[in-house]
Length: 269
Image (cartoon, rainbow, N blue to C red):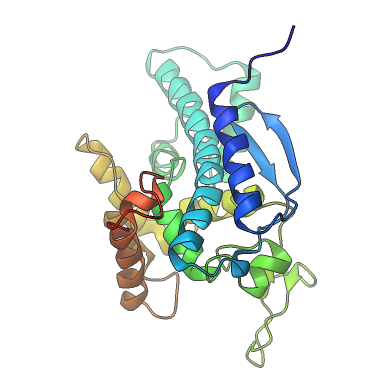
């Protein structure tokens, strides 16, 4: 008896077939390790797509499910974390595995937690263990990777221009200033690149204002939007406020396209 393909997986198979055809039959290595996610180890050749609108659509359709999958992982961890907080609030003890998991989570998000009831540590965890609006990630990826065509994107699967600081950790920029030691990080998959970006937004001190804004919006019972949170990315680029304006411009011009709601022939693109 043949197995029925799950709808989400079927949509992803169709998406990959579309990308395959759109970029001229480029081979993309895929491994299905979760029913609602996939691992991509090679970028399509976006430079081969001459039509600008088509290139945007393929880029967004390619990257969106990966961003959403990585966000889901963060949301699951957040739910588990808050369930433990609720347990503590009701006077119950955490099991040793729960305690170990929580301390490991705190360490991953650069939160000092010597006591599992540390109020400051919990405040930081609530702000840091959270999802990033997918449109924000898509807009930044478009800018930082030149729509998936930059050297760092093609050679290192780095879509967000993230740096690393140990020798041979990545690719040395050709125009690196004298005295600088950073390299542009390389990744084994696009998924890894996206996960690293989300971690960076969630734990690097420079984006503290973004996390604080996200938390305050959620406390008001509203979902944080990409346009709102772009304000907290002024330090992501040397361009400062101009960079924020660029992010917001890309989101506003491509809002529906980013969610896959428009076809290439739609005039609203």
